Image 1 (cartoon, rainbow, N blue to C red):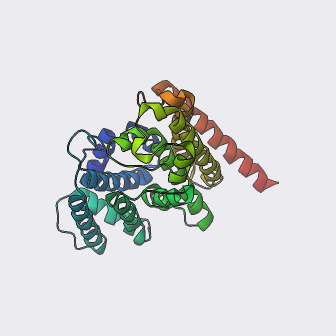
Image 2 (cartoon, rainbow, N blue to C red; image 1 turned 135 degrees about the vertical axis):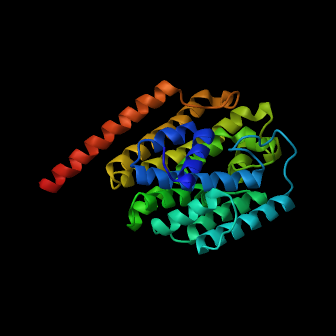
Image 3 (cartoon, one colour; image 1 turned 180 degrees about the vertical axis):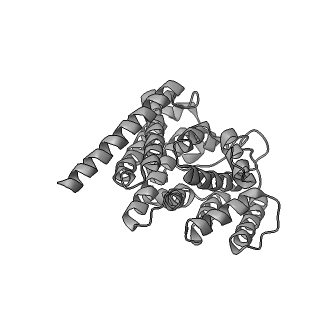
Length: 306
């Protein structure tokens, strides 16, 4: 356990909120792991405040928060984040001190945390996305920029590798959207591209109706294809990370991609129960990621010596 109370608090948030993230973070170097904890905890806190959830759970189980309440909460989050990064935050919530610390310590451009909040604003206004390209903009704001910030924590500075980290974040968000289609529809959120839904004959207000499940599954298969393209792009950047970071990210990438495989395999039954990767399969994917990381390092070394 860390002797740093902020890191310890953020670690506990992760342990309660995401078993998969906890396992992937355990592979990281301690200093990188501490930064990951602090980034995740701030993101989780902001998301929970906007959606009135606890650690990502509870949305759709009670009255939906009205947009005016969400907009006020978002404005407060902006002010708190601004004051934290400026060094003037006087509140008690540790996650703001955590985000301020990693921005300063790892040279994260100060606009990046606010880009994430801009993505949350898209949810607050109920924005929908006509095309895959428009959806990609949303995915950048709520996940791609998180990948970029994580890459900074891992010591990345070159533009090409940062772009690949963005691709990975977007791919993961597309997978999340595919997995959560019905949960999102239950609270009036539609992320699937509207032009795809129109071609499939599915009115956005009727996504959750069982009679549309085969058509929605076909639309989601296209979304997963787009995610896989992003995963493949991201692979080019993983080899440029420090060894333990590369292993962790390769494992997380494999597990998320596997969620997409589960969804695709289930077809129209994809949302009868939550899609997940079994613990045994996760351990296999983590081991495979280690092997791939080692082989990639050896290949790079041989090329350098040739």
